[in-house]
Length: 104
Image (cartoon, rainbow, N blue to C red; front, side):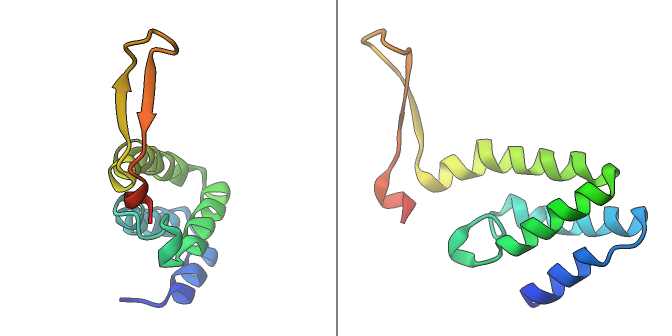
């Protein structure tokens, strides 16, 4: 359990590509489990520093972007209780229903 500030400083001070890759891989589970994406956890600064690091070191970008896409498509809907339903009216073809209680 490490302080948010320490992780952000660590990410901001990567000097080599190999360091950035190791740091990025170490932070991927934090994205996957939603810890640094969830606003209630107050860890979004880590996500910001990861994005900055990915801009400086291009080889880190694919891992971080892929992980964010997995979170967006799989984890976030489960946390929010999003359900996709086909429309029987034929208008638009699909509807999304959000469990409001699940968003709190």
